[in-house]
Image 1 (cartoon, rainbow over the protein chains, first blue to last red):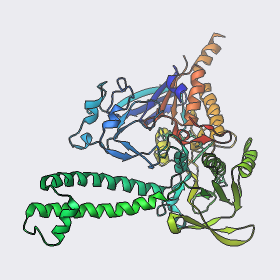
Image 2 (image 1 turned 90 degrees about the vertical axis):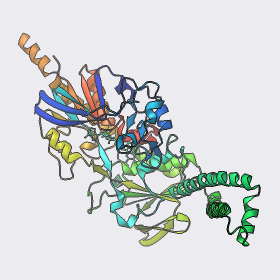
Image 3 (image 1 turned 90 degrees about the horizontal axis):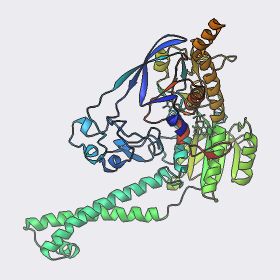
Image 4 (image 1 turned 30 degrees about the vertical axis):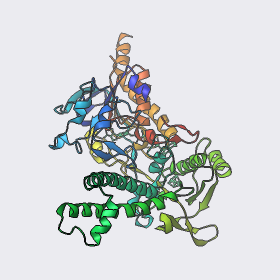
Length: 452
Length: 55
Ligand SMILES: Cc1cc2nc3c(=O)[nH]c(=O)nc-3n(C[C@H](O)[C@H](O)[C@H](O)COP(=O)(O)OP(=O)(O)OC[C@H]3O[C@@H](n4cnc5c(N)ncnc54)[C@H](O)[C@@H]3O)c2cc1C
Ligand code: SF4
């Protein structure tokens, strides 16, 4: 990533989109919209002082909504470029409210609320489409209850939980437990505020609230308006403290998730959605189970799948190593349903196809190995660029020219072409680069030919 | 004169293609929709089959 940012021959146009493509192989005219970040790119040092002060809290997409960011943000800490961006959907100032705190904080004077989108025209010989994939939305499979059971998560969410720089600092804290902890924090804030107000009243009347409240309830001070207000405040305070204590008791019993289930082929090899195998998900489930075990040696994982597809250099050995060293059990069977049991524990009901029995098992957390789906904007992008899509909406290629699209001079690589893992994406990228280079060097070659 | 190349998408595939072209002396314009490049791989904790860190 750093190498791309620093490379003298690479012009990075981040936070931008291609709006129009005209021409043909060797001579394409491309229009790119550089969306405004409302931040001057040449001034922003990426220090992050603005984000510390910004009062607007927004779910963080990089962390799959498991953490928060501010309305002014860097996409992730090591992101290239490190330039901050103001999210126009959430920023107070840009939505007609009074704010501008970031602009007051920024010592580099980089914030510019009037900055507009810019249009850039490019002339290129070839185009490579590498727009990637989307994670399949498991909410489309109602029997897995992804939207209802908090401790059923997707594999990409689980990656963020495993990450030391993620929202849990790499601890396997369960989403249901994190929600309770967040509620405790919110209630504690409320209690601190009401305690402050009560402190003032106690000082004014020179009496502890509890003692006063007893007398008030016994019928004293009925006509005293100020004391009436004090009593109301104290009652409201108590109404928060009781549930807070309950939640705290509950939270004292929380531990990290140690019994994990991984459900394979969620949306893949499923005729309701995608009949194809996404290729990488068996491997990433094994990886995630291994890393969870590294973080917490008591972790046990069950991987539920029709079969484990470990096709690649060193993959089968990796699978066996996981089974031997990381407490992973491979269960052959398809999961029929996930329900919620006591303590927010997901219960997995499946057919064990080896024993030919329907079984149920309780876990702390369930991870869904979601399919590799075409990106949402793929139809629009294909139309803009001028290439055809295949029946699944990946970019159409043929088996003997796997990086050539239906249009000469336009190539494709990575998951925009079909589901594939990182080593395959990299190999395809080098092939696409090579095909594009043939066109980019064409004028030079022709010149040489003419000279000869 | 060598022609420039446009790469759409700054995930691992787009980054690799850009680096290869750049190293060949070809000027690349890398267009990424999001505020930073890296794609899905930047979100991964580690990658199989070596369990190396993703970024
Ligand atoms: C949970 C999980 C774990 C995984 N773990 C591994 C692993 O350990 N090892 C491994 O080899 N593989 C793993 N994979 C697979 C890996 O994520 C993919 O192989 C790889 O990310 C594909 O790279 P890509 O560049 O094709 O796509 P992406 O990473 O999706 O990159 C595409 C980029 O294009 C951008 N883009 C999209 N549309 C546009 C547009 N219209 N204009 C401009 N830019 C656009 C996107 O914002 C993105 O930055 C995992 C996948 C998942 C889901
Ligand atoms: S890689 Fe494994 S989990 Fe993914 S679709 Fe193929 S068989 Fe299913």
